[in-house]
Length: 258
Length: 276
Image 1 (cartoon, each protein chain N blue to C red):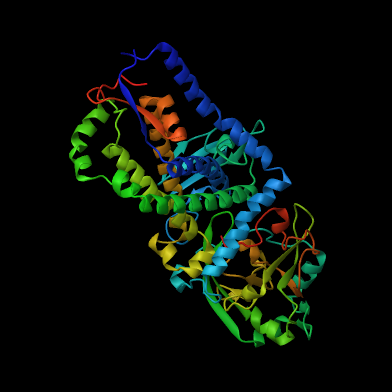
Image 2 (image 1 turned 180 degrees about the vertical axis):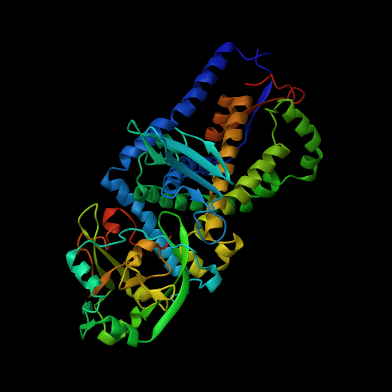
């Protein structure tokens, strides 16, 4: 007994409907992407990832360090590769002799460090993998001073919760300055350094001269270049866009561990 | 006159719910994954991305008359894929983009939003998979229905012959051996693989569990395997939909929605034209 034609037609229509439903569904998701509430809902994913990854991990767990032979032949710079701000250009023209790193905010003894000051402090060298949010990875060698060493020197007050990194580069697309923030767990991490050397040479301008942050367990955009100052704060809601970083203000996750 | 039939309860509630949650997850995760991939549309092997040696790269190359040609470079071979891969139109203009707008979520280039969709629904997929996995083991669904038993394997030859002749069993009470193998490999291998390769791309996880990227030969290989696993999922989905179409959309949809399925009584089950 063969099935009646009626059922055949119904079946065919259902099949068509099933596939045709996908396009409007994705178009709907497209429109939802523009709403604030959806972005806030999906943001729950970031909070869960942050909570779970941090809970399951030893605070001091180190990012893998590689042998010299693993280094990338070419380490492509990303973001700003030549800051245009006149103040920065003046500093660069002088080999950053007049540049000072200002460490301030919720600290007992605010301080300003010259490059020579930083080089006199104990140095750490690490060959690590740099993971860009875009998906690529490059391996490079970084030498600098541990951020923890500087924080100990200025004596962080108990109220401080985040280290906000201020940068010299103004992003071309928006005219806004680059900045970033990390919590104190990351700030005191063994591998969190302010690097002044890359691959055994003075840090090139394209990679953030004179000083760039390395936060080895997070994505590249956390590793601010052209560092001018570090401010210890209790909260970052009142800084720039209020989400803790230049890209964070543009929808990227503050927790860039994945 | 309808043939003599019996109603059987084919899919229990956890199976049905987890099935549809998985379907929704794939519908979001695949296009949002392509959105993320488009930020750097190339794949590599190992820890690093050495840009002169990609396994796969979707590129846009300008032509003499100021147009863009889409080029897919795969293992050293190049294919012109203009309009689909490498270069395709966005708002009426041809632009450089790995996958075309109809395959990505959001449709236009928007990495931050693609990541939000992807990383949220990745959690939904993981929780859904854990719930299904635990339930399926606890309820003996795995042992009883999914892992091929001796009698299933004994029917392998006959089942293969039937499949090759497009004679698909429609009224069986038990999954046939090819269904068992397909479902077990998706739930037991592909699912965990796509989650682990996803986690291996996380710099934080790599610090916490160094063996994770190591088993995939590095972060960039993990990304490549993640990509291949996506296409394995897509391949499974295409086969799955084809088999549903071939064995009766109505009865299949009915049983995965309500759980109930109508089977013909013994003696008539192997006649494939008689169904519904």
